[in-house]
Image (cartoon, rainbow, N blue to C red; front, side):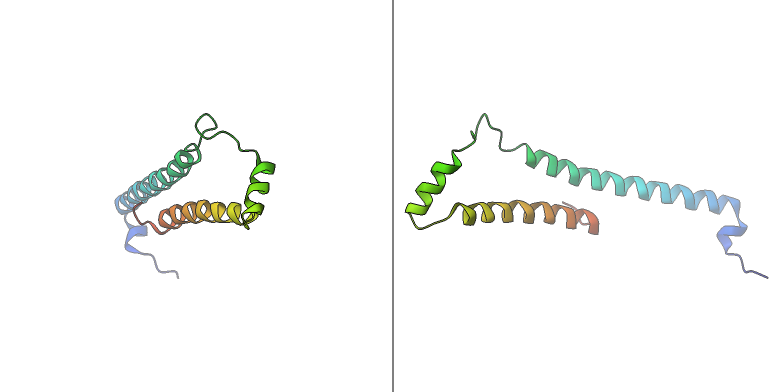
Length: 98
């Protein structure tokens, strides 16, 4: 014979447990959507109208002449972006407020 929990024996408790779970899921979805919205907002922060697309060939020439590489600059910029997106995602996944 199987044991049943108090919730399984009480239909009202089952309904209340489901409602609580539904509220918890809605709160979780809302929190994750907030994080996604922060990422979407960030993705629109650098429009071409304000920051025109650079001449990458010319930038490479100028940087190389100064002893730097476009690859190093690009890698640093991407690290910042990926770390920022990662932080937003980690906070959302852990349930920590943004």
